[in-house]
Length: 152
Image (cartoon, rainbow, N blue to C red; front, side, top):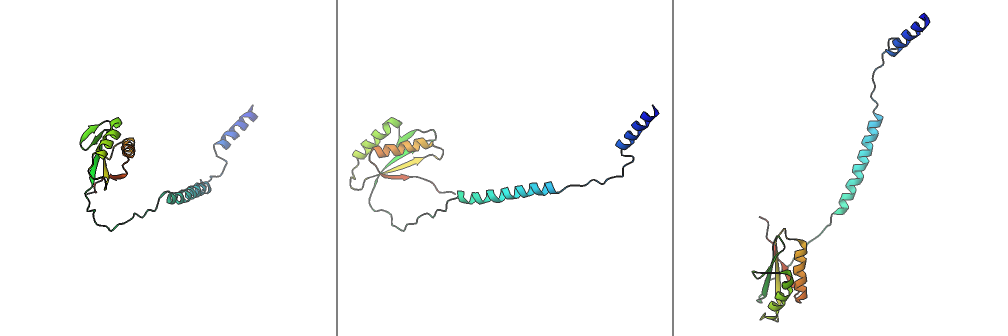
């Protein structure tokens, strides 16, 4: 029995570190450096792809005098909720083509044509603006202008 007690006492002393020399804790930097290199490589690759997502566009310039001819204009207003008004009169999408046809036929200036001004709200649905363009196409009107405002 004393032999067993001696063995247990020695194991307790060994497990508590009594017989072992104190060891300094050491920080291993190699895994940290590996992770940093992977992050660096990822950032280098991802920044080269963002360069190709941009388009270099040079807008055209024009030096021309304002047109002297009087052009009949039809204003199509597209509201924020997708409703239409032709020259200030509210109309339905189904009646938009018919209204444009009537105004085109009644225009006095057949030689200059009719100019369509689409005044769409900045938050108007894209489909509503496309519907106005389709109505102008159905009425054989090709002189289309979009209204905008300057930034202040």
